[in-house]
Image (cartoon, rainbow, N blue to C red; front, top):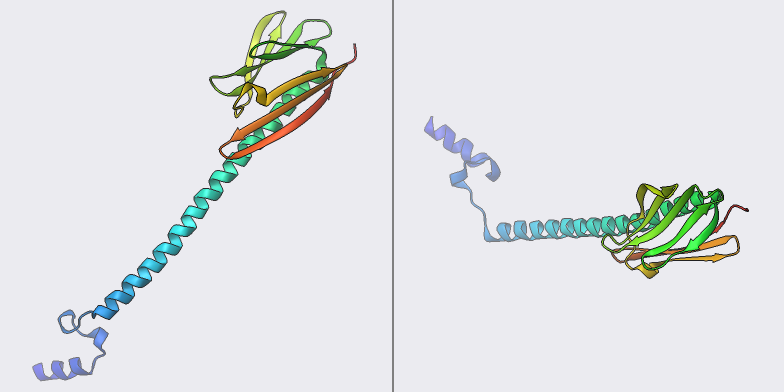
Length: 174
């Protein structure tokens, strides 16, 4: 019986024999290591590219969102406002309704680096809303009034991405 197992064992391919009968050569080990390094380098390169692309996309999305949200709020307020009063310091200015009951003041929050919209009703602060979060410096936003045309320039910066928009709004005629 033992002889039968020996004959069968000798006729079996090498990879089917018992572990004590086979071994791994140095060449096989080096080839396996080389293949592993190649696969790891391809995967790590793909992962790095994925992370960099995602970061760039997030930054681009943030600055575009800032510009869009600011233009929506400014457009809404300018359509209802009859006048714009320029401000001083961290206050860019105030949009006033014709009857004087509503005011929308735009300010710069240097702590958060943000453009802030404050809503006043009869001189009492009703709400404070951040409308652009990636404003690095106060001069990155400017308000200019020419007759009934309000022009606002906004630069939003996130990471290495920056976007500038020049927005023009016609105030409500008195």
